[in-house]
Image (cartoon, rainbow over all chains, first blue to last red; front, side):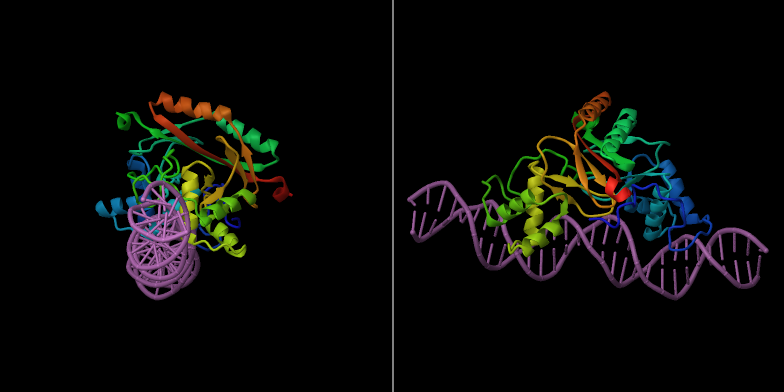
Length: 149
Length: 149
DNA sequence: GCGTTTTTGACAATCATTTCCGTTATCACG
DNA sequence: CGTGATAACGGAAATGATTGTCAAAAACGC
């Protein structure tokens, strides 16, 4: 229940994700393809989803690579990761800065919401208990207007 | 990315969790054992953890049953489920009412925190966007005083 | 080009969680 | 107290997302 708990949460340094020391990132067709795809699609998608989309549009990228790339982008803070209660990790390119998501339980429709008040509240509460180096995750689930009808 | 997204979040009715219709819940040694254990232990534990503890204390309960029971308790709202970024689901019997957790990244030490302001904020934001039947998850991670030193 | 170093990607491995399904235990009712 | 219907168990096998492996392929500084 410990020893590995800083994956997605921590603000990890942007480094090569394999095992190497401190070389330079290289531009590859695959990385470009994944980034490009993320720039176009709406909403959240799983790694497998994205992989399938790439295949469909003719780009040949291995599933493993998609995972690695997404992980890298997530670590770099360029995309968001969401862990819905029932399943896979979902990735999405979204706006800069810290924010949260309001997700439809039924169709997945997502709205980005900012909550400055929540941020400060979290910081304060944590500080009160002596906790440092704070981060948090917050997701709101509900049924969107479309799906409610 | 849809069709099954109401597991832990939804306030599902308390029903037999196998496949049957609407019979009555039965009291079994196993369920009692799991509940009893949860009542005694501190902090969060994974299903496998709890299963091991039961084995150690002589109770013979199948892993499958532990999973089922925990799921049931979670659905019934009697225990909390936390999904840490790196791994297994963690379960814990905690105080009544809705609340959140402040968790130490290093040692797992957890503090329950209430945030009425957050609740209302979430409701309001959701309502603004027309979302109904709101629920949310919020977890704060940090390094606790002990581990910071 | 060339050599070095990073990346890739097919496949195997992991591992928590579920499903299956024959067996067992509960419990309402007689 | 039996006892019968059926909820619950539990071990083994299945699932399925993610990660590890490692030889082969690409990048890029020179």
